[in-house]
Image (cartoon, rainbow over all chains, first blue to last red; front, side, top):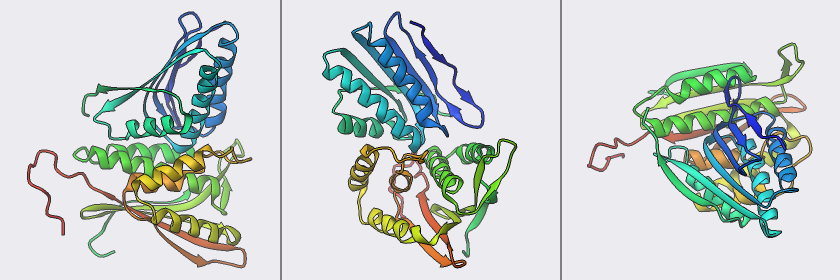
Amino acid sequence: MEDLKITGQHGSFFTPNVHFSASTGICEISGESYLEESFEFYDRLIRWVEEYFQQNDRIIVNFKLTYFNTSSSRAILDLLKVLKKYKDEGKDVTVNWYYPDPDDDEMLMEAEDYIDETGLDINLISYTIEKK
Amino acid sequence: MEGHKVFLYYKGPFDEIILNKIGTYLRYKFPASPRACGKLFSIFIELAQNISYYSAETEIYDDSEKRHGIGTIAILDAGEKFKLISGNLVENDIVDDIVSKIEKINQLDHEGLRQLKKEVRSSPRKEGHKGGNIGLIQIAIKSENPLEVETKPYDAQHSFITLTTYINKDIEETSETTSSHA
């Protein structure tokens, strides 16, 4: 199975960096997610996860987003729901949510809301960013 | 709007380039107020995407034949707050729906808004909707101020809808004294 790699862009829209590794099971989404076709973008990630779990039992997903718009936020929820589904089926699913300090865009609050909505355990981890 | 300084005014189609350019400009406009700038940016993006997707007035703006909604956004420096105003045409039959949505939003506190956002976000995707359908709720959460809405009949089918919201500027982090905002 191939890795899924998408290099983030700051063009007309902001695409996050994606690196889903099939060999290690470590998947990272970082940067900013401001997309027009949010569902299309995240559905691709969901399809990769579904294919991955056909042959694997363990995944670690690291979210390190600093901003996302509301249409991305709904698509991210769908991805988290899929991860929760696999966890309920007995797969080893770890989700780490990194939020910046200072957290001007309230990423911690977003994660808390996702935990509430999905029932998924998400590890909340803060990291320091240089002030611009 | 006496004493209010307009620092951004745009009228026209809200295509992705406009969203990106204005959004980026707002994000770094006030380096002393990073928190307010983040809010300006994210609220602008939500208001602009509302216009882009849902304005009743559209224009085919580029070769891709994509339709972009036309509308207006103004942003003012109103002393202790920033004021954002957006306006666009909407079909008359959805006006009541938008107004009642905003009235509901304004009755809720921060926790209530988060709850409503979760409820709406968890509902099934709407056919033909590109957005999360939670833009207005997110604007209210981010702005920490009530939304104001005004509608005026435009023609037999359309009304002009104006949304106004505010963002509190950052309080000086270095100062130990509590700010004496009247």
